[in-house]
Length: 576
Image 1 (cartoon, helix red, strand yellow):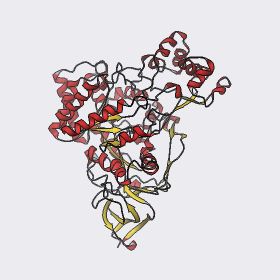
Image 2 (image 1 turned 90 degrees about the vertical axis):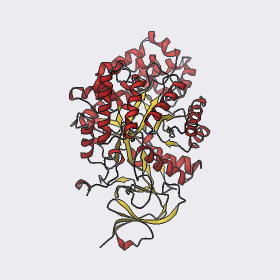
Image 3 (image 1 turned 180 degrees about the horizontal axis):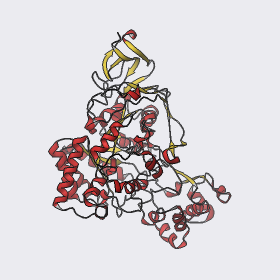
Image 4 (image 1 turned 180 degrees about the vertical axis):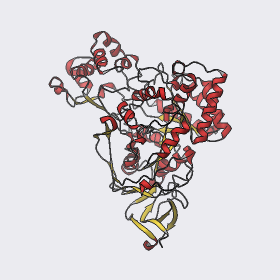
């Protein structure tokens, strides 16, 4: 009788723990790594040939928004195609629990702008068989998954559930009784399996107010009081478990840093700051963050950074673009129905304010936006032109050059822009900090704009293979073990006996990111942008092969990890 369900034979093991690579076989039994070394083929029911391949722990993605998508896409694509085997959902304080039945439509509307998830897809694809956060987790657990899921407790729905929508969005200070009730709900949610709590604190009046509600107003956590956040931090401290994910930029950098340090100190738990991003024309921004993180390490304050290490560009039209919200005038013209947006963009009375300040936070220099898909004969002449070049040729201000094209095309013009972090020097400065978690994938969000879920493949091909900024050993620690430890994925992120068999087997020399595509595969007849990968021989989740030669096998061996519990549960019969 075979001792192992599978043996991965003859691969080069990079274990995620920064031990020097070595050649070995890996025996898998019951969803776990049972033996490492020289294992005869006859001892296994199935042999997976890994000759010439790297065998490494599956990647752990701490920043996703698959809270809705996981219900219609067991693979949480695009993450699954790039070696990710475990994801954390509920980031930035956004999610769908607790949500009362009468508030479901409003909860979905919020996500159409702040994370740009299509409303039709949410309406068609979400079962809504829950109200509380524990009930939401039960629903996730019942849902077939080819990915491990670990949830944050998102603060915006929690604030709404106790304060009411209007007061939560107005930033009303909670009463003592309301604070006590919110802490009670938070503790119950953590007990059900939350790995900590998350919040976005980007007030619309601040310099980074770029992720707002569908009507252009603040999200509840944006206007949450410091006192409330500290009470939530103390809940983690009392339980001595979990961590905090925080996106924060109020306009007072020193105050933001002091507040996040206070949260980490009050909780005694790690705080993961999002995001450490390079702006090539403003390098002082990321250098100041890096200096702060180093100071926290020296003082023993458990604050970590999550680095935006991908340079995935943005493809978009103004039918749904929402990431110019940092400038009020631009926020105004991108809110409303298509007809309302078109009328505002054509309004000459609005143009002076739009010329007065150009957005830069997401895309970098406005003039570098490229016209990639003119939609009418009138605008065909601008194909492959930058907005700066269009402005130069027409003698217009760049704001007018762009908006005149958009108006002529009825919002349908396709644009493309590389983000503002193209400098390899600046990327290396971020990479050189060993406690920066790699990647801000936003998986499941901004589906019509962005394919940042490719970041693990990009790390291996660009950062390791092409530019030699990291060794493979270091890269796999940063992609797997470090984020797993931060999030409470006990035993995951490393290859060792007894660990769950979440593994990637890939051809290092052939690994590549494939070109971007538009696919119409979302519920509600919606579409999205994707990028697949090439070069992954096998991807295993809890010992089952979920992808083989870059193709899905339709095995649903993923688990809901309630606060990082790693028990390999009974296999879902649907995965057999």
